[in-house]
Length: 66
Image (cartoon, rainbow, N blue to C red; front, side, top):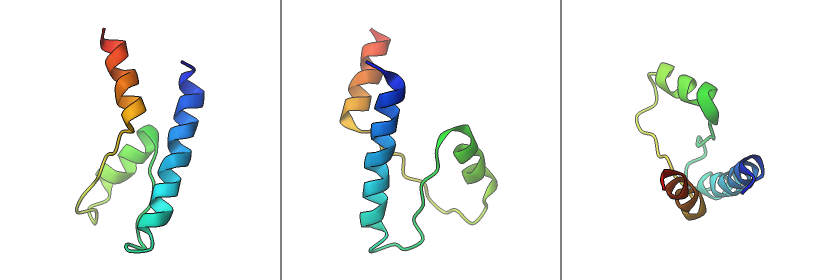
């Protein structure tokens, strides 16, 4: 499996989900990678974080552990 292509597909899917979520929560935004984690950790105004892993990515991670 090509990880970079896989990652790109996940980001595209996540952005689509964010577009839907913004209908109800306009301030929702995406954060990616180490820089995104650093932004979240440093921002005291963030009350909650939701980390969502697509089922395909979970299967990919599981395959790496075998």
